[in-house]
Image 1 (cartoon, rainbow, N blue to C red):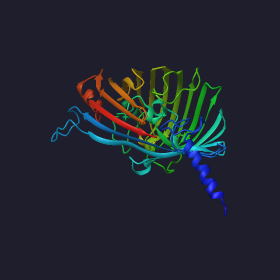
Image 2 (image 1 turned 30 degrees about the vertical axis):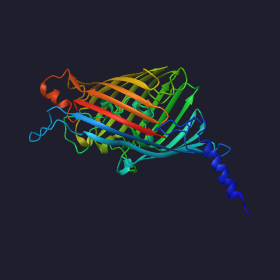
Image 3 (image 1 turned 180 degrees about the vertical axis):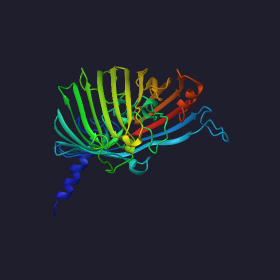
Image 4 (image 1 turned 90 degrees about the horizontal axis):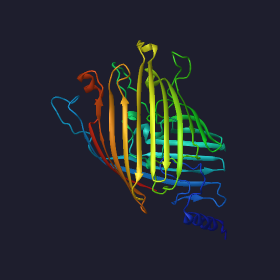
Length: 404
């Protein structure tokens, strides 16, 4: 009788009983931390192949109150976009193969269309200083996106990153926002001397909702109409964790300073060429965590649009958190956005308060936040009213998260 299948099954059972991903620093999910994490996993005895499935579910209760501007006169309902939602329902796997390859595949069942595929990439790890990533993954811009999704300080990103800008034209294309988020492309990246991290990449520039190759050459510049992006970070105390405060990491001391830029050639389906520049910092000291970003968007219409005037926008935020206990973290954020460009006076300012509760032993995290939208510096009431169109004046959210 051939006993090889039985021996293979016993070997696999032993690996599953061990149930721990090794400490390989390249095994990433961008969803939950994986390296060294206890959980369900497959691993060969030699450790050259690791397969780690993971799951993240975020379900929220939301209340959004809008002021009267922009509401239909026949239906003055100030409360909208409220109730319960599943913001993310992520199921995927990550791991290592053949000693030099790491990979990730993630489906977001809370989305539709091409956005259903959140991530699909693999890394060729030649050495710490030289790695190549191809597929669908996070573009190297905005620290708010680059942190691990399940370990953010607030349940929602700053409005200055996600809200579209206002321009005084009606176009067939959507107005751009500051963040570039997930996209398809190729990236060269690495860590030099344990302190300098670089990322240089070329992407489609169409975001998470498009998985196809639909770009052409730029009519204005004669180069491929793609997103060209780069980021350089300096971490004087060694590699910065990708969380924004973790109950399992209360004795660490790290800091990060970074610059990033990207140029989206003929962005938003040949409407404009968008230059983005950003600066950021992050500081982790025991129970304290602070981070801040400032970003600039230069929007230049293509010649086809027959609009010579460029538009410039500015945004940024500061936020911090402190662990009162090993389970309770307080958070505060101030978000600022010059949404109507430099040519129109006025800023949106959005202070927010948050509370995070870590339910240890069950991989549960409860997050609550309140955000107020204020406006100041506008030249007249009309400009003030138009600045916050589509944005809630009062926002409250309670989110419960489960992961493994």
